Length: 65
Image 1: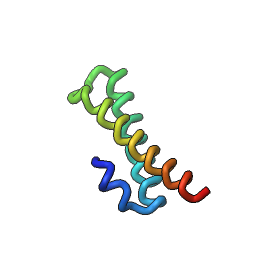
Image 2: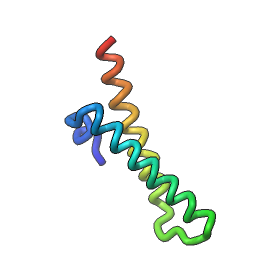
Image 3: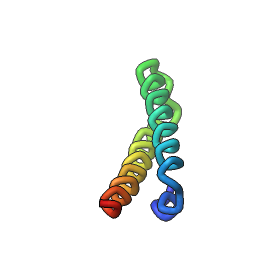
């Protein structure tokens, strides 16, 4: 997910995407402890996407104040 794509989304859509990514990360962590993670690089990619969404949301909150 690219930052330019995220800027065009509404705040509600961003929050929904963040929630979905966190659910995926939770499921991936569960797979890690059961010993069957197919794509270990997915952890990093999910965390980066979550951080991007949080950055866009915080930038919007700063502009409002």
